[in-house]
Amino acid sequence: MKIDILTIFPKMFNTLNESLIGKAQEKKLVEINTVDFRDYTDNKHNTVDDSPYGGGAGMLLQAQPILDAFDALENKDIKKRRVILLDPAGKKFDQKMAQDFAESDNLVFICGHYEGYDERVKSVVTDEVSIGDYVVTGGELAAMIMIDATLRFVPGVLGNNVSAYDDSFSNDLLEFPQYTRPAEYKGMKVPEVLMSGNHELIRKWRLKESLKKTFLKRPDLLENHQFSDEELVMLKEIKQELF
Ligand code: ADE
Image 1 (cartoon, rainbow, N blue to C red):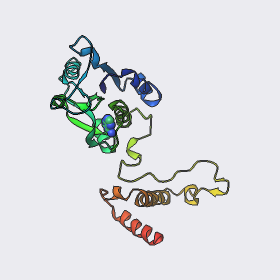
Image 2 (cartoon, rainbow, N blue to C red; image 1 turned 135 degrees about the horizontal axis):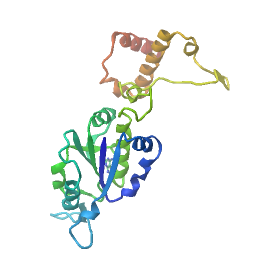
Image 3 (cartoon, rainbow, N blue to C red; image 1 turned 45 degrees about the vertical axis):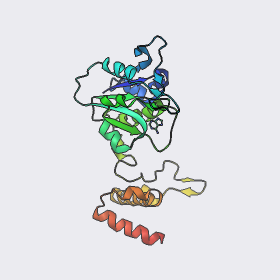
Image 4 (cartoon, helix red, strand yellow; image 1 turned 120 degrees about the vertical axis):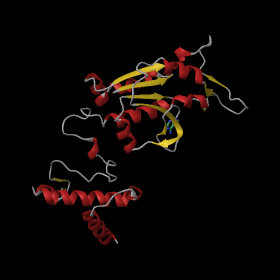
């Protein structure tokens, strides 16, 4: 996958050279290209923003430097390209969107600052996306979160036998509790069933714990969940045990 990032703070993306995403770049699973769109301004002071027509506070990013930087990107004829505008007013990013972005050959992130964008920037955008209902100082941190969550779904990024599809949220359920050695620590014991070696009992215990955790912490996730018959029985038991 190729990722292009249009930003006026390209150095912020050095963070992506660390950890698993750094390794993914070394392994050529992803190529990350940052473009400083200030280099594309057509004015001698290299400004990228201006005040809004019609008046009002704040400055807007101009369309010209962003669209010229976009036009200069390679491989414009790539079929599976998504052009993502980071915007607190966009659709809220989630695990399903990360999975969907991971199917693309090319992701282009446009990172904004100041009060917003000239509306004409959106002429090339396929997705307007937010990381949540709060405002950060710029789109860079938001883009990095989306890039990290997306690349976890690209085969090979997490290493062998580890799948982002098993994570919390991937099936609308939070992950079950996990334990490692020792079997008892400061009087706190690992549930017997996990040491039983009985795979079917362990599977059932994990599924029920996932359901219980989701029911207690994030009941909203269950609204989208397609319950199996087994899960419906478990959920009934959970409610009886709790109330
Ligand atoms: N830029 C500022 N706040 C943002 C948010 N919540 N999501 C995406 N981009 C942003």
